[in-house]
Image (cartoon, rainbow, N blue to C red):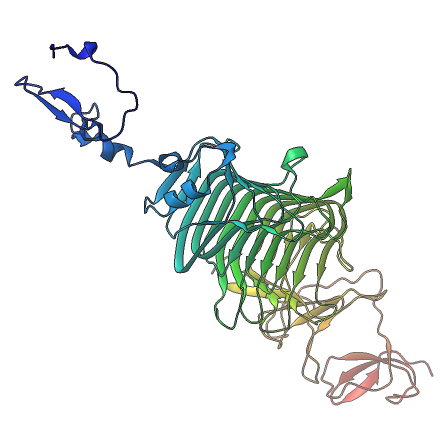
Length: 494
């Protein structure tokens, strides 16, 4: 056979990774052969080292490395599942539409990420979960830059175990009974920039995000310590919920923040779908809702507890919650279970909570508010609402507390405690010897109501008005002054 130069050789019809290449040494000009994957590459940097092309390419594993097509027609399920079981750790899904006919199982500590939000779409052409991940302990999964279309009655993402992170996620489709994202027995949730539902082809018919304790008997823990932020949910069916934080029994959802949340469920214009709820919290403790916008919903927020002790919702805060075109802005379970929701804080809200006894919710102080000492920095004075329209001011103890009752037409200032030794001082100083008393002016008049009995333990300096019938110190109705062991009438006309 005549010798030929390389450019004269016939091209290979179908090249494979095991084909041989002719290579020439860099210095000694010797020739040899190798497979393409063993060719060496090196970054253009003085400290870089040579690596094989195969090793370099394996740093970024793609579902297309395992046969995925991404045309929206071919079934890519096997390619995805093979990629997910390859122990690659991080798996890239290039732009395209990937049709799946069965549920994907995601191993713990795996990252699945797309090209960009809205460019990589996974289409669930079945009725199971589009993706399921579970672990006893740390789950550690990451989902980024992915869109999910839920066909038929397919559920969304089912994630069980600690540490789950979602970034730039979009979900559409589904049916009214499913959840777009379902966190089960999970701590350390981090969801950032999620869009669930839209208009037209992006409509979402299910429920949004659920975070729950699935079985307190077998999972005797509280779950929480998470962040849901920059989330936009558009509900497209009746009787659906945007976000559900679901503690159970004595096992709670705790210490989480919902920030920059927008939830809307318009059936037409400003009229909401019937039975829709923006945010529902069951047995939740120390939750913070900040910058939350709730529009066109049947109910804005539901806060529920199952008892007035363990299982109650306690210490939840609402900061900058905005409600518009919502049937019921806020409701709790206190009407059916007394004090099952306690110690709430509403600050800087608009049209919220708008419940009986509360106006616009612009600033509603908690049940007990401490004011710190300017000099020492410790808690100095406590203010709280005891019952009805009564404001109590004290230092943390009932003794010495001051009550301000603004109910009815006759507001009162009085000591909270009762008894013969309890006094209310007006002015600066509590005794003559203190020598710090200042003038006290009462406008327009001072009125002492008629008494039907005398004080049980009168002391010198007291003044009272006797009704003269039920209590007559000796000179009929009038003002009396107590001194030297007896009552003396201030003025007497015989």
